[in-house]
Image 1 (cartoon, rainbow, N blue to C red):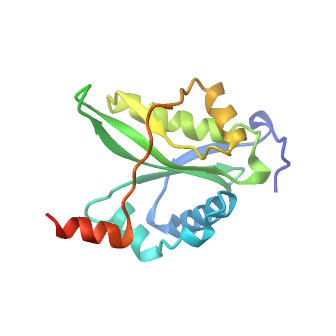
Image 2 (image 1 turned 45 degrees about the vertical axis):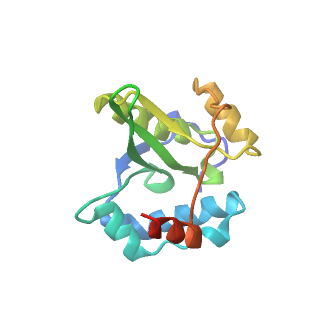
Length: 170
């Protein structure tokens, strides 16, 4: 394991697209993120779901993985959205997670910079994500990258039985 303050200059940091063989690692990252966010009870994704939705006939999301000296250090999972105002696609970062022993070593910045690069290469007009309001370290990190809060917007979500009921009204 690398120390908490290992620097990118003294180790090898690589970011690569995930492959189907990475599904167990992706699920491990998701579970670790869910524990950190105090939402472990909500992390119910399966290998089969990840295979179908990341690598199946119609992928819904993409994953990049960061490795430090060959050891899995973190990941980013993202997907496209669309801005009707700009008439262009955007990228939504669903998950960004760096294992504790790799924090402070540039892994998170490299992951988020790689997703930003993908957004620019794909002519996206925006790159956005959500952060829990209590996660001050993440909020400070995002501000240091130039991210701006969207305080006037509130996320709305329909799940489970409410989603089924709403769908039946169509």
